[in-house]
Image (cartoon, rainbow, N blue to C red; front, side, top):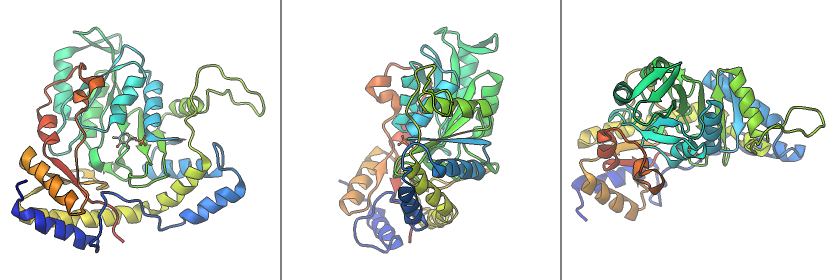
Length: 384
Ligand SMILES: *Cc1c(COP(=O)(O)O)cnc(C)c1O
């Protein structure tokens, strides 16, 4: 391993930031508010499962916070994405545009419907879908017929587009939304990592037909496991709630289900935890911004690229990100820091390199390929 002279200082700097010489994880949850109080309240009420006041309250507070008109709590972010695909009308044989630099859930959710993901390039600055790549793919491959977008080569319908706000950094969502609009493609935002992140003061996940959030243990706010569908469309929200509750036709006592639904509701006990966590979000955001600022200052001095929010974007800085010079430096840094007890991680393997998706359509993934060899995430937990 070739140890660069900045590795040791950086490891030291991170340990000092967290005031600890012990193992520094990538991202730990913090329970500093009313978590125990709400969890006890939930247990005392006996309503720990799929209905209860915490679910309703958590949905209401999430809608208020994000500015979405409706929010439906779901058992996890992956299932929320799956339902988002279904309510957007994605069906088997469709194509869905997305980015290859993402967590597996994005591509899997497309796969569950029987649709094919199409992988477009990302921007080097936002790490999210590139509007140029999207437009140029559509200009050379798509035609709009009867208000539907059709891939001229495969003859398949291009039903939806799923950009992701990578590590909490908002992508160029306004441009993406306007391209989708022009081509009659539904916009589904994977905002799993970007609770608290906005673009032009509008919360990520609220620019298209439907968006999703995740409350997994490693996200900025956690319910243990959980997710949320957010939307401004009342019909979409109703449909998501219905599909997530076994497609039960509402009735005070009768059990009647008129299609094959899902058991994707968030349990009340998870919502109780989520409600307390959501109250802490403003403080988390402040602390994360402060940490990102310290990192930015440090890495700028070292001449290392620290990924910053772009113009009009406000990032939650969920996971702080470096872009190193090449794969070799990246691999050496990962080995050095992890051996020294500072947890760092590379970006995900690009989706188009995985066995399930290796035959999917890709469109000039220059930046995605370049980034995937150079990205490193560094410890980003809220400091206490
Ligand atoms: C976390 C995450 C999800 C959802 O994950 P769950 O663990 O199912 O909540 C979806 N997409 C991305 C990009 C994520 O990071």
